[in-house]
Amino acid sequence: MPNPCVGILVNDKMYRSIPLGKTKYEAVHLYVKAGVKYGFTPCFFRIDDMEPGAATVSAYVMDNGQFVRKSVPVPEVIHNRAIYKGRKQFKQITSWIKEGKLLFNQWNRYGKLYIQNVLMKEPSLRPHIPSTYEATLSHISMMMKLYPTLIIKPNKSSVGRGVMKLEKTDRGWKLTYPATVSIHNKAWRTLTFQGNRLPLLLRNRLQRVRYIVQQRLPLATFEGQPFDLRVSVQRGAEGQWQVAGIVAKVASKRCFLTNVAQGGSVYRLEPILIAEYPHLRPKDVIKDIQQFALQIAEHLGSHLPHMADLGLDVGITVEGFPMLIECNGKDQRYSFREAGMLQEWKATYENPMAYARYLLDCRTAEAKAELQRAGQPAGCMDAFDALVVGGKLATSKFLP
Image (cartoon, rainbow, N blue to C red; front, side, top):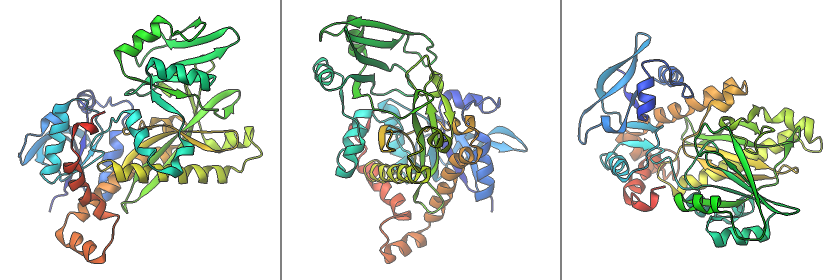
């Protein structure tokens, strides 16, 4: 009996790069390697490759050491590694779920404000979440009275694109902003102003795109530069959340952002703590971060349809207290590779495939019936429950 297929949903650019071997930040060969380990064939396709009700889909699969395009049975389990923004794509994904497909990370691009509102429902998480509002003129004015430094960023951006900093000075306020909102922006500019009337440039940007305004966290520093952490949290072979790795991202001297795409550097966390914060015990700090990340994942997993793979940006204070900066539904995993953390980097690819194997095993009616008889509320049942939740909640409010 041939191995079953597990789908990896990718965007157009990634799809075109697969046969050329130029997938850059996405290590597709690690999916293939994990597929061999768990007894299935990863197949890579785009959302428009799968026709409604079709029994097969055209996808790239590894064959004799190279990727070839083949017609394969529509996978029962699909890992979403694409980002879609339109209602058309949202409806397509919803239709797959109604047909009984198990699609994890069904929707990857939730707005930052939406995620914050979900997290604020849990009282124990509130002390770890910075003050955040939609960036209206009145909200920014209010925040300027409360905090000396603010971060203003698009509600739906990633890798530091479009982020601005507003900080109080002896003579008024200074706005630091990117020359362009391109992901490849390398130039930063500043302007100063007095009083509460925001500069025209900022007001114009706020009118074009929805932004949020957030207090700038008092981040711990390394060699004088602030750093935060990328924490990869994923479901694995047992269906439970686990932390795949924690990597520190340190801002460059020319920019306040820690994102690697914006010039930040990456390091293991423990050496930083030993060098800069001898009063802290690294093992305790790391344990606290792991527990915090798992709590975030559990809470989001219970409120969003079938989340299973998250990248959390977490800051810590000089006392090691974790604070959530933002949550990413499509984790950029290359930070671990850049830091030389190859075991953690490989784990970020293997864990989702282990979870896919778990879901395949849970697809049998016997397994589901056994879980129901045992009264087990979590684990495999979460996957089946997600089908109901996904269909029931597939409304516009889940659009980012």
